[in-house]
Length: 360
View 1 (cartoon, rainbow, N blue to C red):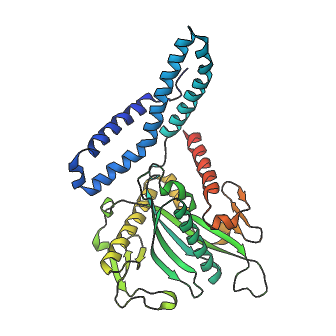
View 2 (cartoon, rainbow, N blue to C red):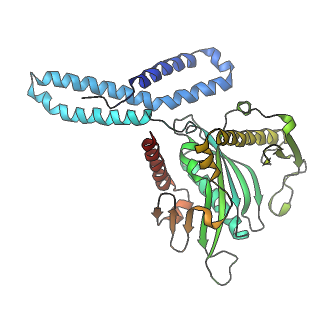
View 3 (tube, helix red, strand yellow):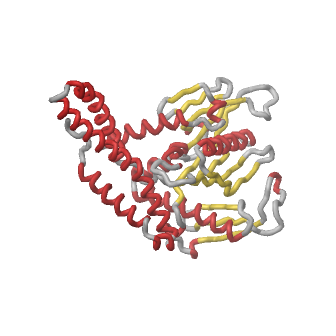
């Protein structure tokens, strides 16, 4: 049976890399450099599914070879051959898929921004519904969510909010691998709480999402390019939540990117988190400029938060969710808003995988 793995050197390189990482992890000196320890641990976790599948495949091939040899002398072993052939075939397909080109950020954590658009208070309320949806989805997957900043409307919605979403353990398929398709304009059709005549309105909110680097140092930021303002953290209606100017707003002058953080208790902590978010934004911007395809993909996340440029519609009267990029439809909107996003994200992931394979 011919191997389906088209590049034998690929698995050889990974075996060598895995062995090297294993040696590094066993070296006590590694723990003196936390950043390097995280990098090595993260890469080791990324290779784990490949190594596991390769080990199973090697064992299945050995069993198949032995069954074929024994079948020549004992017919009872012949019955095992078809099942073992199927097992080898499935494992080869799995390994080939694991070795296929993939998004280099798939194991990364993310920063996710939700912004209200057309629709005033209704849009802000919908933006808060989206933020809650991602929060509940993260809870289902055991991820950690930190609200870095939130501008709350009079009715308790989000004019804008910034979330940091992190997996608790390194993984090949991290937060980015699941949520990277969420960037864009999300449209809602429902009767707003402010509507007295019971009429259905359409409004929109935007989502921006980008990988978060492990360390700020991964992105070079010139301090002279920054304007840093501090102000008093505020809650709903502008009420102060503390008596010190601990909130931080950082403006990157060359790009015009503005990042705010007021979740932490001290100005220093807020500045550090704001710098991490800025680094993530600048890293995504640099990748857009370096790669035309990435630029087309990420620039299309939100051109304007306009109802006509939607990627997904949430129709409350019909309890329906529609993803317009792949024609996905489901009548479980209530469950989706409660964090049950796996069906639509699986469909988007499969479409992306098919597109990558077709492009090879």
